[in-house]
Amino acid sequence: MSGKLRRGSRIGKYRLEQKLGEGGSAVVWKARDTIEGRRVALKILQPAVVSQHGREAIEVEARLAAQLDHPRIASIRNADWIDGHFVIVTDLALASLDRYPRARRSPMTALRIVGDVAEGLAYAHDQGLLHRDIKPANIFVYEGGRARLGDFGTARLAPATTRLLTEVGTFGYMAPEQAYGRTRFASDVFSLALTAYELFAGVLPGWPFEWPLEGAARFARRCPAPLQPVIRKGLELDLRRRFTDAIQFHEAFAKAAARVHADAARGSERAATRRRRRLAPALPPDPFSLEMGWFRRRYGKVLEAVYDCHACDGPIAESMSHCPWCGTTRNSFAEVTRFPLVCPDCERGVRPEWSACPTCSRGRFESNGRKIPGAATAERTCRKPGCGAPIHRFMRYCPACKTKIDRPWRVEGLPPCARCRWPFVSRWRFCAWCGRKNTRAMDVTAVRRSERPR
Image 1 (spheres, rainbow, N blue to C red):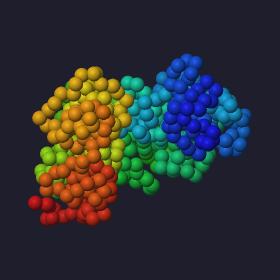
Image 2 (cartoon, one colour):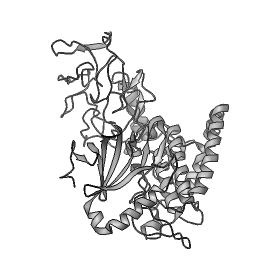
Image 3 (cartoon, rainbow, N blue to C red):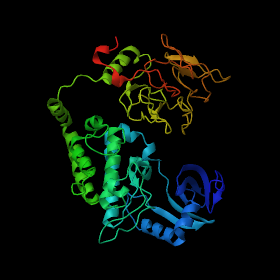
Image 4 (cartoon, rainbow, N blue to C red):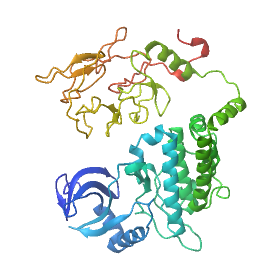
């Protein structure tokens, strides 16, 4: 399929603009409806899927999904055979949840998204329809930050007698009983609860799913207290202790979320934090905290590392493309940046006078036309003839003309990275600028308190 459909080609009235993803069952494209003048998402089934299941079975699947009419479910605008391909047309989302780092950085954003998906899934279960493949890639975020559950292409009406189904699903988010071919409504609940846990904990735990799961400490710290027992019940291995379906899960989640909002309105969250601290056992500082404290004192100011990584809580700077401690590239600064605007691509702060993001250069925004003001903190000016825009430390591109900064930045006392030649701290696990792995970095999990850096 990929050899026939390419950027710029047409399928029916739709012109393909960008491939958003490809899997074993379908290819998803961003496309423009040349008749209505709107942009949509096209899910185009792979020929092998059509050959395996047949036209009739595929049409039945699409018909079942099209019956779902709910604001928290991605609605199907059209499903049809076009130029020999089976095409499902839906509204174009801002991003799927796995490419929406704001949900991992902001607990309240994660709460809202999980609540939206739980509401949509409860409606589907009430209609007797299982999803069977709930994961971040199948949850879509739209304008306003509201989420919808999509890709019901693997769903079928559950038999009224047993409520059991077999096959499909995604390993990693699949409930244990689903892996053995005994899918239930409670299996969808497990997958959604596991997705919620990953958002708050910053890590996806695996089998045997015994508490405490990986990342349990961060989950307890970031997930609002009223929601924690709801998510834990959704992750119960024993089906008798888990929510029977998403209707029960949504009711419990909505009640807990209401408590969270009420506590915030009354300002009681600070009191709850004090109670948790009183009840928590006094533990010595862990090696990672000691290491990060040392780094902040020594290099935090000069490297502008004043933020925390959403995945490991290590100190990072807005100009860094990689977390130097865990290597993730999915940090969002939309809610913490000191700048007035945010780049829609990398979610780092930008100024209204800029016509390009100095970190990624890809941001789809336009300058307000005013001259970029000079500043005492600017260390260079753009070398491109006729530009001369002020360049601040650690910028990768000129914010006026997108010219790449050719001279590596230097910091006194720090050696250059062997690959990119930008400043490098020997204790980093990864280069914060190019992502090169530092095989000589000491493992902070092995640091003893007596070895605290001086």
